[in-house]
Image (cartoon, rainbow, N blue to C red; front, side, top):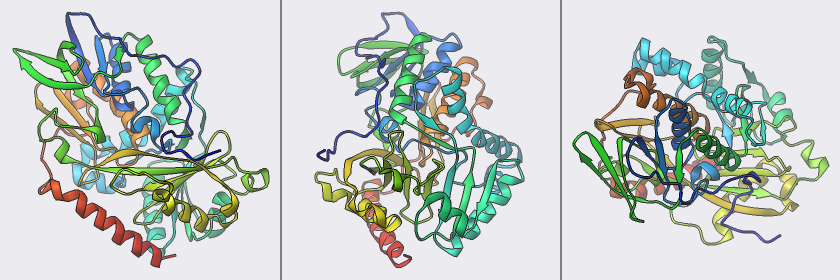
Length: 427
């Protein structure tokens, strides 16, 4: 099978609908949601269930962006551990945020179960693999904090992580059994299907080019000529954010996440590589993450070049990482290569903004978007329905563009190259 650069291995459900012309006809909507990824669709589903009139507008096709292109790891928590969150946000908000972060994977798997979504999944946990003593100490600290809160987690020693991953080079790690893996494209398409069934209108290829306030309402105009009025607008474009809301795109640094997928593994190899079906992220500065797919491939991802890829060699760093971890895979073909865009915020936290009443924006998944945005969408819908800002787990913050943003990506590219070199010395 020839390698391609345009499509992931993930598959749409057979009953996946198209939403090319589902536009609300006149009247005033409760909310227009710009962006049909996991955040936008989760908000739409729960808002429609709450009785609100909702229109989702996506510039492309549903599943075409990062929501359908990611690695499908469903990981609870945030980049920061509970004690840091409490110290940073204060006792009350910090504890509430820890509880919210702990629930994000449950939100996904409960939705798949309760709505009977046609989404391949395995919920056997996620391993944070440590390749240095420093990383192992951090894992022990994380384990202590989450176990104190009753989480189903476990610190792994070297023999245990070797048995669970089949990979070389780890000193130990941390297993979070609350986590799992899904087919992210199926999940995104199924979210769209149930949101539509709940009454939300979803329109593909409707790029919003202008927002303006008229009295107490918002007017959203699309490139195709649609003109919609709503009480609220939610910008759920994340790494695909453009100039629609001035300054918002300058609060994030968009990065490319590259992935490769092997051919289906022979039975003897499959039995020794991730035999329990867990997902893995490692502790390197430029980390790699990997899992097995429903059809028995090994899927591995990590940061890619800042420019758009154009040839197979642009994924060579991932192929080297694959063989470093699993030398036995050196003869297995790489059948798929693809990439998506992710958003990094300077403080590695999601940012929620409401610069004007009824104009809301969410950016920054930090690699945990499947669970985080599913759960955050439900809270955003509650806020739209009630007006109670306490429904939002993160505080609303002002839009603060990154200083010298135009040069930031150059700096990030240089940092990635430097970190990759340091990682190479820690083999």
